[in-house]
Length: 464
Image (cartoon, rainbow, N blue to C red; front, side):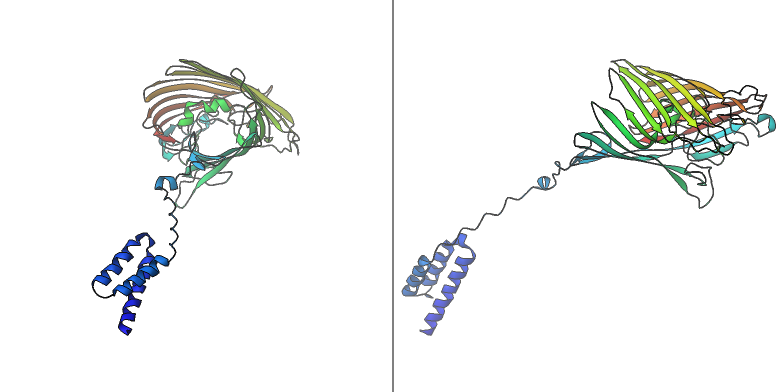
């Protein structure tokens, strides 16, 4: 009896284990009990008893079907949150676009100028003087890395913009990131944080900008200059800074990056207007506490059809200077005008500026004489470029002139800085361009002094 009960319990345990653990395979329990009966382990009565007990048990609830498995592609699909930016290198995170752009360049340059003797001395001259020199350096542009974060809020297009401009050459750091070069062991390059500004606007209203960015007066002159991609006159090559001169001071005054509050209108039939209030710049060498901002403005016109294109601009600047401690007070002002015309692979450009009390090379450098009287200045450059496939050949000539004031006697002061530029470019990839360039620079004083220098440069520039 005990053996029969033990067999019955074992069989019941097996039946319950199988039936409970795998309800989807209930027929297996029936087969097992039948096999035990046929082998004599269970009697007919025990078999009937177990089958009756099994039949009396409630049917187990059906197991819930496991949730459908996501494919790897579905699991990684974040297109509603992150997607490629329409332009540049960047992403779209929800309603916020983050775009990265940048540029890197480097050139080998050989500079050969007149000897540094009295007859070659020109105050404000840009031709290189001294021994021949070679350098591996940046061109007119240092490198840059720009971050733009944009979105739309309450119906406004808003953005934050940051531009880092590091160089490859070691600098002293005295006077800024683009200070005098220091090609010595253990020296470091500078980082010029020249752009940091916010924008907000609407398509039918225009855009407002608050922060530090490129100026309005003279900006189109440098942005369309072929030496922006290369070296131009070096401005000193034996101990290079993070930037060369390009055509700055040899056809236009440098616009500079300045603190500003500016407004740019929408385009109307190709026309667009920009105006702004700017942090007033002090006259180099004077003591000033300026009471009012500087003001700049620009009008542009753009037109294009299948073969032709045109970009025309007219700009202006004015600023009141309030001298202290014996420094003069005066108002400097200037205008500039230019046009760039394209037809197929050919483009030509003409530019002119004229001012009084704005100086030369940079804003308010050599702008007055020792008595505070305003010097007149003007300049121009002409440029042409032709592109055939991946090759571009380009050339330009430009001149900046600074006048003496009435009665001023200063024979070594700069009269003219001029330069010829010849350039060849090859677009190796959509990002990388290879360049070669020859530049002749001449500086002339109001007296008999003059200086000349020649530059050969070759290198590469990358934009993304």
